[in-house]
Image (cartoon, rainbow, N blue to C red; front, top):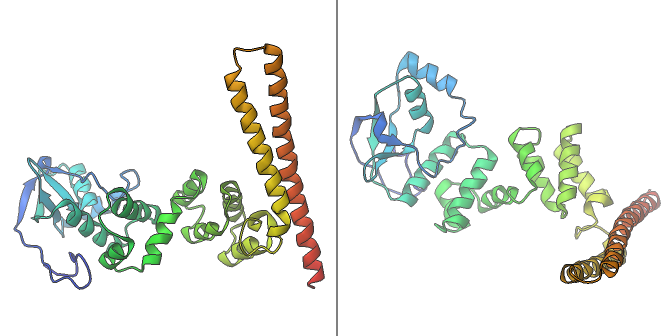
Length: 297
């Protein structure tokens, strides 16, 4: 068996030993850590290939208590099941849970079969969820730079609608990574929709983030950031006051209905005032931007 298929890392001299034998499909199960989603596997092509030419490469499985778990070959197993095969050629290897996950991840990355979000989730499971190793350790296992892994995992911090745009390919993962410079989730969503609607290049996205105050007013690179701080401080102060009134309202629900109504009215006034301040801040930021752009010509 070629060592290029099953290395744990680039320098490992480990080899996997075991017999290739036909195992009953009913005794084989998918891994609980399946790296690929089961809804968009596009099995038609591989199923037709197996129907015409047979299974050219056996599954890699590991023995569990009373069944075998797939390490490599999820799509092949599902395709053979759809063809009503009773047995399937398997290479049985003895791996613990971490090793099995690493081997599966290495193979999927080698084949480029994972989407960026599937990679992100796989990296997160390894590093954060299970604590199997650091970013640098995982990078050495899969042959990538640590920055690659960090960028992938950071994608998962983007708003849900942005992640959905990446899933349906209306937004590329590389464009989505440019949104990391935008601090506000709502603005990330707005810019993602703009990118998808206008098919903006990464260069254009960077220009927007750098120059448009709507997106970069909270960024360290924005020159007018200090000028907008009074707005930000005022908005925070009003939100604190509104939250305190909301707490009082919860405590006084059984008290005087008249006082309750008056306090509720004041809370709504503060809410409206916050909205006005946000609009004023945006308007002021755009005026500054236009002025400085004219002065720099």
